[in-house]
Structures are given as C-alpha cells and as structure tokens.
Amino acid sequence: MLLQIVNGPNLAKIGRREPEIYGNKSFDDYLLELKSYMPGHDIRYYQSNHEGDLIDALYNAQEDGVQGIVLNAGAYTHTSIALLDAIKAIAIPVVEVHISGVYGRETFRHTSMIAPACAGVIAGFGLDSYRLGIEALLLKLSV
Ligand code: DQA
Image (cartoon, rainbow, N blue to C red; front, side):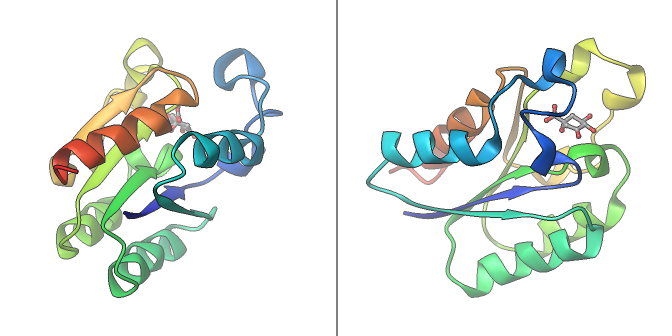
C-alpha cells in the first residue's frame, strides 16, 4: 500500500520539544523503525508548519494515488476548519493521530475540528500512535 504520514506544526521538533510529553526520540528515527517494521508498505512522510501546505499535501497525496493518510495536524487539529474541509474534499481515508493523550491535557486540546471528517482518532500512545494509525488504515482498507 502507498500510505502517507502528514505532520503539522512543531512536529519536526519531536525528540527535543517538551520531552516529558512527546518523548526523546526524533521523528526521523521513529520513521526508520516504522518503515522497517512495515516493509511491505510504501510509507511517505511530509511535515509543514503551515496550514495551507498541509492542505496541499492532502490534495497531492490523492493525486499521487496514496491510499490512506495518517494525519497529526498538531495544534491545527483544534482550530482548522480549512483542514476539515480539505479532508472532506479528498476521497481517501484519513486517521487523526496524536502522540500525547490530548483528552487528559488542557481543555482546548479536547476539541478536534478535523475528527468529524476522519475515519477515526488515535491519541496517547506516544510515537506508536502512528503505527496504530497505519494499522487502523489497513483495517479500514481491509488489507
Ligand atoms: C499533538 C497534540 C496537539 O494538541 C499539539 O498542539 C501538538 C501535538 C500530539 O501529537 O500530541 O502539536 O498533536
């Protein structure tokens, strides 16, 4: 399967950003592990701090024939109607993921603008949320 991970703002800093919440491992290191754990799948990765670029990434994924998307929209999760509309506008399943347990954190993190358009939400399993997100996608795609 051709799958895409899309990470939003501040997620390039994982491993150095608030390690007590997000852990010590960089996303690049995690991605290498994930790819070797799932050698049968082509897992693409894109990160941007900019809302419009994330929207373009969703459209580009569809144009490139990506079959499923794991999206950690970071703080845009809680604010972005534009991302919600973009997810609705593409025909491929999107799983919303979060490294941290957003429902145990500040109340502003309890709201997801994008969840209504997503196939499901996985939060609170550290970086393993991405692996679980991919497994959820594969289930959704019945692979
Ligand atoms: C996050 C949770 C968001 O609330 C936060 O703004 C992030 C990371 C997570 O992966 O836990 O940037 O999406």
